[in-house]
Amino acid sequence: MKEMKLFLGPQHPGMHGNASVHMYVDGDIIKRAFLLPGMLHRGFEKGMERHSWINNISLIPRVCVVEPDINEMAFAMGAETLAGITVPERAHYIRMIILELARLSIHLMSYGGLGSPTGLYTLMYHAHTDRNTILNIFEKITGHRVYHQYIIPGGVRKDLPIGIEEDIHAFLDDLENRYEEYRDLGINNPTVLARITDTIPLPAEVVWELGVTGIGMRSAVNKPYDLRKVMPYARYDKIDFEVPVADYSDAKSRVDCKLQEVIQSISIIRQCLKLIPEGDVRVPLGRGQSMRWTIPKGHVYSVVESSRGEFGYFMVSNGGVNPYRVGVRGASYPQGLLGIEKYLPGTRLDDAALWVDTMGVCSPEIDR
Amino acid sequence: MTNSMSNVKMVSEIIENSYKVLKKEVISQYQVSFEVNKDDVHSILTLLKTSGWIQLSYLSAIDWPEENEFELVYIVFNWDKAVHIQIRTRLNRENPVMNSILPIFPGCKYYERETHEFFGIKFPGNPGHEKQLILEEWDDIPPLRKDFDPRAYSDRKFVKREYSNDFVNLNGEKSKQIAREERKEKIIKVRKGGRK
Image 1: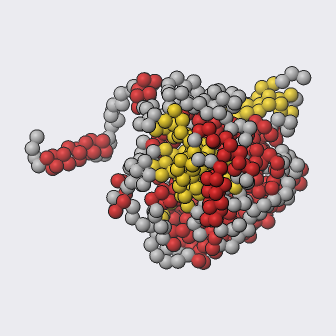
Image 2 (image 1 turned 90 degrees about the vertical axis):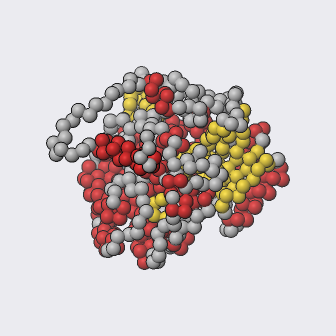
Image 3 (image 1 turned 90 degrees about the horizontal axis):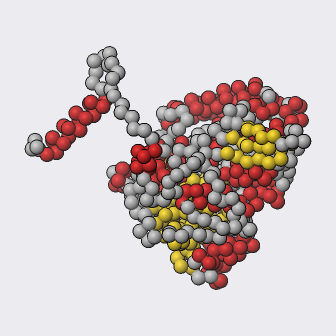
């Protein structure tokens, strides 16, 4: 049979963001596939060289649209390592609360995104409603809904508002009560289960070849390779949590790991709210003149565990007001570009959207 | 081995015993960087891969026009010992060529392609690394080089539009732009002490 050329995306319910998967299909079996990035290239790496360290705070959250807080955290950690700043204890806990709330929101969103390739839109509406509640909490804490610009070098921008603990606890209790309902709606639902079981497996041997990290790797190699455990940043070493793993990575076990991480994130936020000390939340930068803040010379690569894996900022300072070079390692770079090229061929056309969703391919961070 | 600082020491011993290290920096207990000769990079990366640093985390370049050099950075990670290692090397800026590390780390394919696109460094051994990836129909010097000027490029590439303030202000307030200009004039006046 003759090969046919097909585009999945950029306008497709299964494609997240402005990228497209270019596929050659024979019947509905994919013969060749590759990602076409570049539709969302905004020149951030060049733009960061042209702004000061402090101005960049408003630029970096835009690198990944749905999960902006990891960008702020990686950038702030790198700048603190180079400048030798010690962050106040309370700021560490506030950062962890923000990061875990963001992780909850993106896990819910991508679990809801499972609804579009499997044709179950109810799931998506439920998940987006809960994400909206998280955004409301973010609005109360930071003043912004999506791009918070809250985690800055030296701490966080301002303290938590009074009484926010009640809002967070109410939301967490509500989510925990409806957790089983979520499972029944998605992963325990027979139609969805038949669709995602044994779909696009990722063998453990090829994980290292691709460089895949995050849930895609943990569900394949069966080891708790999570940066929060392996090289704890903030105060994750004082928190008690588990890293869900699996020994066979198909779409189902990846979604299952994602849902178990939701429970772990809920528990982390509760522990943070219990352990959080009183005190300052930021240290002043550059003797109070933060616009003229300079950082000593050096090269640093700072990483955080995002919902999709290792998310890193490579930063170079030449001692000036602006960063000399900032490079972003998008967490979905390996599975988005090389993974699609190597492991989509041989699968079926309708499974491509499931790879994009369960591996978490985020086009803004591939393009930057 | 759980203590990560001893891991950094172990890495240093592995590399410094066999290769000439031009510069070593211990950045934190989870990160160490080595600046090495260009010819040693492939054998060092092979050695690290066999010692457990099996993940290539990042590959990119930095432009240093004053020294007429590019700096290539390879970052590898070991999940059991939790140390990020930066291997850095310098290339001549006039004819930047570096053999691909595709046989060692197959995951470098797209990183090298991107580095070629944004810096113009050639990676022989990586098939198709000169194809366009992100920038569509780019017709200037590679954009992340320091001598590329985005302002000049956009002036040349795009039609310049004149924006006129022709909107009607119903409330009779001063527009923000006019207010800003007035404020600026006032500041300059104060700064000069009333002199022209």
